[in-house]
Image 1 (cartoon, rainbow, N blue to C red):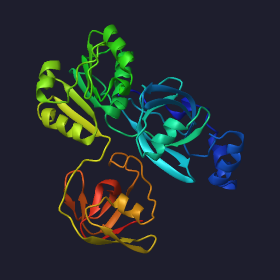
Image 2: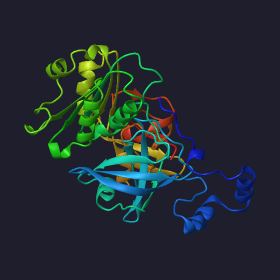
Image 3: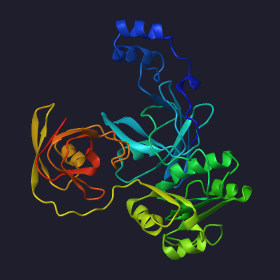
Image 4: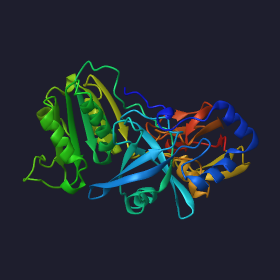
Length: 371
C-alpha cells in the first residue's frame, strides 16, 4: 500500500498553542467566514480543494486536478472520496474515485463521467472551472495495493470502474511493475474509453503489463482495441488463461461485478470488487412501515423494500450521503429498534446498530432511527 501523504506535506501547521488560543476566542464557523475572505480554501478544520486543471479524457468524461487544503490527509491509489458542491442553492454530495497515484506535491485527481440526470456529475463536467473550490471528504476504500506482491494481478474494469484501477496501474508502473499485471477494460464505444493511449503506451513500455480494451457496441478495426464482447468465461480463458493464479480487483456496474464474482470469486487466488451502481435486487417486501426519528421527534410512513435514504429524501429530509452504494458510510446512523433488510444480499437484521447504512437498508417493519 502506498504511503498516505500527511497534511504537513501540503502546508505548514499552526502551532498548537495558537490553535487553542484562536479556538477559545473564535468559533470555527466564524474563523472560516473571515479566513475565506482571504483565500476560499482556508478553513479551521474542513477539507476543501481548488480546481487547478481540467482536461477531457473521453467523449463524456473529464479529469479535474485539485489542490487540497491542509486538512486533507492523503490517500492510497484505489481509494475514493466524497465531493460536494452547491448546485441551485443546495449542497450535493457524491463519491468519486481518485484516478491518479499519490503525488509528492499533494495534488489529487478525479475523473468524472457525465451521467444523464446526475446533478453533480453534470455540474462538474459542464460547469466546474479552474479556480472553483469544492468540498472534499477524507479518502476511503480498501481496494489498494498490498505491502508486497506474491502473485500476478488481474484488473477488471467496466465504464467508470476504470478510474480507481487506473490509479492502481499508474502506481504499479511508478514502481517498475513489481508483479505481472493484466487489465481488461470494457466500454461501449471507442469515444468512451478513458486513458486508452496511456494504457497502451504503458503496455509497450512494460513487458509484464498487458492491457485489453474491449468495446461492447462497436469494433475498432483501425487500432489496438479488441472487438466487441462482454465478460464471460470463454473470453477470460482466451485473454487471461492463468486467471486462477491471479489476485483480482474488479470495478464497474453491479451486474458486471456480479458476473466477475461468479466467474472468479471462488476460483482466483483472491477476489475483491467494488460496484459503482447499487445492486439490482428484488425482494418481496410490500406495504408500509413507520419510521420514528428520535432526535427530531418526527414519525414517517415509508414503503417497505425501498432504501431508507430514498424514502427519507422523498419525505423532504436530506440525510448526509455520499456514494449511495454502501461504501463510504456517510449516511450511516444508529438504529435502536426494528428490523431492516440489507439490499445488497437480502439479509434481515433485527439487532440495534450504530452504523446502519441508509442507502442500502430498507425497513422490513417499524423502526427507530437516530436522526
